[in-house]
Length: 413
Picture 1 (cartoon, rainbow, N blue to C red):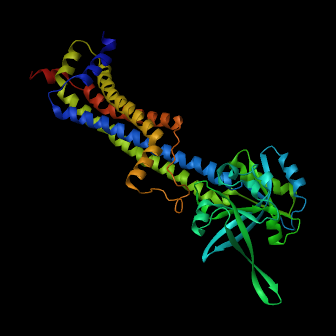
Picture 2 (picture 1 turned 180 degrees about the vertical axis):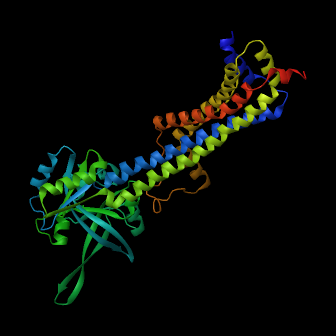
Picture 3 (picture 1 turned 60 degrees about the vertical axis):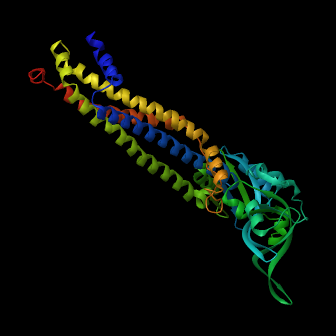
């Protein structure tokens, strides 16, 4: 019987109605604090995981993992592409001609990066084909001078499919009449949308048209590579350059998007640390609860000691009581946090629709909606951390209870 004493009495103290309502209030506050801390921590980490996932799938799905360029012009790019595809880490390769320019139509001007692509190869390195809102990449026929614009770029220019836009590139053409900027009229044949900032500053044209505009002849600007693991992009790019020789140069996604990715990772760690403090405060509220319970139940402790209960059993009673309070709060927090993490996107969408506001503007942030991606590994870590903090908070009150002297207490009873 005495072996089960800590569980029987500890759980009974959790359920018992106390004469001191203040103790009950503190217990409830501790429980609700744990629930809130765990729920918020799960929700915030899920949102940060969502941002991380969106960065990898949207931004890095459009931005090449690596680029290889030739200092003297890359003419036999098909042979080089097939050679690179033989590498273990390379899963896709496609040619490109990249040109920074400015679109102009009806007095509206908007700068953009224009990628000359081969529509038949592009799906090997980009997800652009999956996000076409109007038109298809196959509409980029050589010699037709068609262009595919990002949705925000098209909106800023006030154009749609079938409209004509003028592209000015930062290179001059020398004619008998003088020096003029190089420009070309394009017809908008499609619009894409990935819900990111790339929608406002990216356009696609056929690679042969861009070769003509850039006066490259049969050469291309380089090869875009897709890797099986984006985190090996730097080392893989360097390994490729070491094999190809000094006439080639390369870059990877960390140069253009690495700071954004690192910022998200750092924010996730810092937010997790700060929110863990909330859980810690709620957990250590259990200390004050149990200290008051020990004072309130000192007579019970003295009686249990006189009938043979060991100090370790007395400690166990209050550890069980504190852990029961903590586990209830943690369980409720996990339930609420998981529910919010799975529904936060719909909830925010409903709030935006009801109030007529937009929390995330793709012109400011790199996405236009709030992502959430629940990872059970994070949930398990949060539960273990909260469980550990709760256990630590029970040790001091339990130790005080074990030090109660029956003679001193019962002398005045």
